[in-house]
Image (cartoon, rainbow, N blue to C red; front, side, top):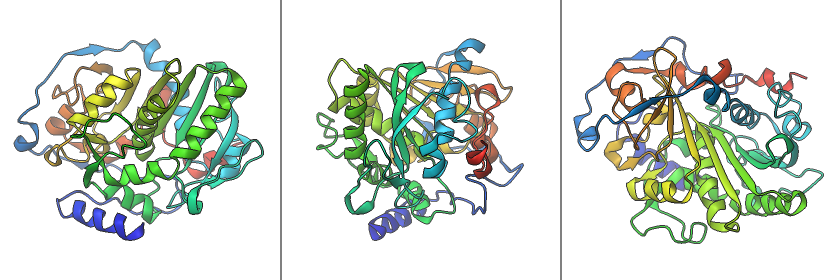
Length: 349
């Protein structure tokens, strides 16, 4: 496992991808006030164009806040998740959430631990950080995945392993043979796929649920997208899949992105200003975004961006190429002033 991730990461790094900065105590942080000017990438954008942009109302933007809280909770250690006691866990309307399973350490074994309601067992104790549970206020099952902690080397290697590989047809039946997916993200997803599916089925059976929500920020957003597709292909057709990602990188190539668009139409990926992460992996490697972008522009206005990678300056790809990168934008603020949490937020209560 380590060797495969390392080799894939080294391959990706050799293409000129930026490495992640080191951190200490915070769950996720980047250097302050770091701005990288726009760089012409004609070879990347030759097939892209500016497409339509539609303003998003304040009410719609506010509707994303619960998904941001769920994404924040995924960054917290297992004890805080199990008790649902973190700062964002105790916010309305997610306070009534009931955890069925969670675990891991944010590295190779990303938050993987048994809890009272169900056993979160993983092959060789390897699984990806996150939780599964029941959200009464939303009448939904929720699957949350942790984003990258840059002081966890395997998590960083997972992000850097940009090598596009064939999709696992056992987990994703019916995927086009031409579809390719990010090697590191697929490896991370495979570590929890079975336990997530089994736990989701358990919650559906016990609660009579008809909706499943998948959420995550950064790496967690990529895993939420994969979970959304995976659950759609492996659950009964009457179960609605709702996917909300925040600061999500590109996950696969054009064939994969279009397959996701077809199978998971209720998908929104929230992007913030000059955040670099939605611009990775680079277009030049064949990666494309799925549709469904809701972007916060430089002025803080929300817009719905048509297409996969919209070159309008009010969309992530267009803003990155025309106005440059601001590393701290990956942390927020998002709807309602939400910021990616520090570790202290996990023990707020």
